[in-house]
Image 1: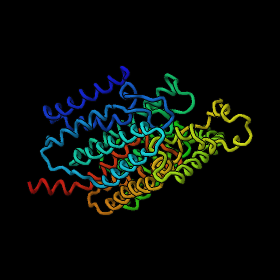
Image 2 (image 1 turned 60 degrees about the vertical axis):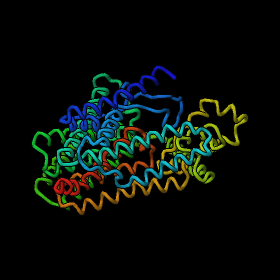
Image 3 (image 1 turned 30 degrees about the vertical axis):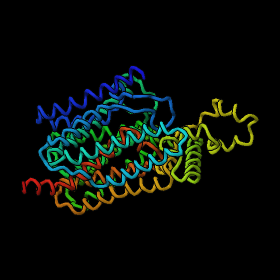
Image 4 (image 1 turned 120 degrees about the horizontal axis):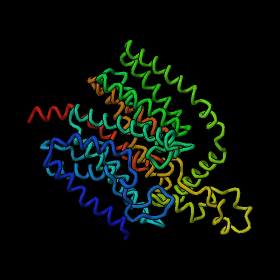
Length: 457
């Protein structure tokens, strides 16, 4: 055990009781701590990200970890369980059963895994994400709580915009693709794509104060630039589609002159920026290597083969290890299988290591690691959230919540579409954000129930 591991464990063991105690001693800090918890999902980065029992592994998860959001939502979790909120709890939130079933299948997949220890890293993160979801469902009780969550999300996008600006134009630390405070440009793009449809929906709604509307507009602009400068082709196309979808549906739901004016002005501004960045964007599309696209297909072929050969998959978080250390390796090097003289020497060469990694398809990645059954449960899980979002959008009579639900619906759409091309759903920041937004959606659906409970009390 390293010093870093001990420090991570100590941080968790001391930090969680501190948060729980602070909530008891100063309950007026509840909303502030909620906002900090939401905001810090965008900055899961050292020194605020401590890996415990780290492994030098090319897979999705490389160890157990402690983050700032962990300290906060575990603190909230124990505070709620001990009756700190003095309100009735939802002990089994919507869709929890399917995620627990996926966790159970993930455990089952480790029975035949070559490196079951690696799988515990991911299962540990799945459990943490479920606790975050449970906390959000139970802590967001009224409009003020919803406002805090949205304000923190706007702040997170602005923070990433500042990161991108400083790295690109002041420190010049980024010369090609911007990453913000994330480990990869695509993570930045997907995180932002999840949020900005809701920001646009709020701007169009007219529910924000004049000052907050300005901050929201700045965040929307900053978020769009983050996606553009990440140079993620798919994220850029999906973002444009999502924002257009929000604008069109918002007008169809309630057409107003104000919305048309905002959309017209926004179109002009985006068009002006688009002219400035168009050459770089076009160059990115034109210069994208065909080999990269082909490698993605090879990854998917290997994932499908793993799913076919193993009833419960090769073990959660094992795809990269299986690709590197078994005959599945040749699915990503089919052109070399029958042409190299010494396969072992080729595997150790720089060329023979260049295509190793993780399947860039979240659904096939689950299939490879947990079997077709695991993939189906995952699809059903996200599908039920999606269906819930649509039902709430049409059922709610509160225009403010309807505005948020519209943004969430298009935000979730960006994530699910991106999942056909990426595995980033399983990166900590995006996973946490998904469960946080899903919890917000379910909490909004519970608002009448909270009111009824308070009235009966």
